[in-house]
Amino acid sequence: MPKKPKKSAKPAPKKSDTSRLTYRELRNTPSLVWERLSNDEPLTLVADGEAKALVIPVQDGDVAIALEAYRRGRAMISLRRIRERARKNGASKMTLGEINEVIREVRAERRARGERT
Image (cartoon, rainbow, N blue to C red):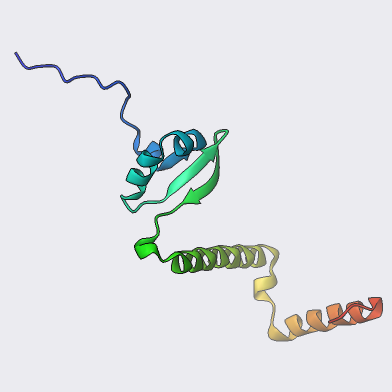
C-alpha cells in the first residue's frame, strides 16, 4: 500500500502569492526574504492588503544601475500614459502648426499674467 504524503503545517503558496511579501514577514523572518530574493525575482511589499512597494534584488551590489533602470521604467510608463491621453483627446492628430499656435497662445497668456515663459 502506498504511503500518503505528509501534510505540511502550512499549505504551499500559490504562484501569485510567492511574489507577495508582507511587512510582518519582512520584520519577523528576514532570512526567508533574502532566500526569496535569491531567486532573482522582485517581491511586492504588501501592507493592509494593498501593494505599497517593490523589493528588487540588486545584481552585483550595483544599486546605481538598478535605480537608473527603475527611473527609466517609470519614465516610459509616464510617456505611455501621456500618449494614450493624447490619442483619447485628439491631440495626437494635431499638426506642427497647430501645436506651435497653442504654444504661442499659452506663452502670451503667461506674459499677460507676468509669469516667466
